View 1: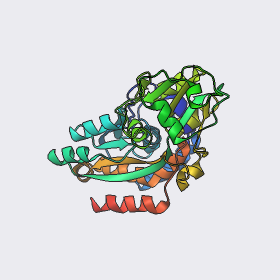
View 2: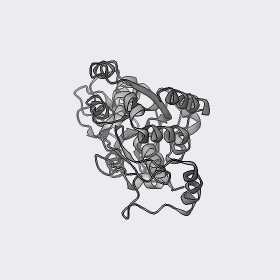
View 3: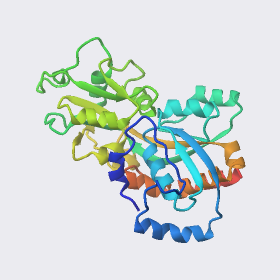
Length: 322
């Protein structure tokens, strides 16, 4: 299997990620291990053809990318394309009927459910992993080790002032804080807004981007920078970033899974269109493959897998939609 944590650092550099599980001369060659793993699988798999389209969260995208690449070894005539326009943007396309599934780093909102109902689209929610929204600073920042929720709120809420590190702790430098944040279409932004900002306005000086790699690069390049994004992006760049404890707890697989890393532990979802699952065998097969392998892929890219019974329930829900 590929080193997905390494690949995470070198992919998704644009606002959209297009992944094709279709075998051709331009696709990357699978590793010897991948060939061994998938060769046996294809003996028992019916050959399928078709197209599958998804869009949504940049946080969930690394899991999807890994799944699509591995799925290509099982069904190389199925083309899976996945856009990365943020959770909100992904739901907009899902509601418009442009996609078969939406990746989301937060639960679907009531207004999104209403719009789907009005559009006549029934859907099923599948949780695929857990994440710990990570607060990071520059590697050379030698003063910040731990922040409370109240510290984060004071830093990130717009109050008309120029934010300095010394505002949080008078022993810290009187230097202006440089903020990097996911864009407002991002589920990561929505989650931070809910649990940290209490839906107050984000500091206006923040640089916003739907591409988490832009946030990573921003923090890497400025000693006074701070950002928040998914745990996998921190792990993929941990040699050049410093993670900050929140209320004394560092995000790890163990603290995220146990919920000790609170309030920044969160679930990651795929929302699937029921009619597409029934009418498109390629999509049904891809979702089945996703639920069978999401735990392994989540761990491979740096997120936290669910208990097996959660995936088993998802597979049972999927089977019921046939």
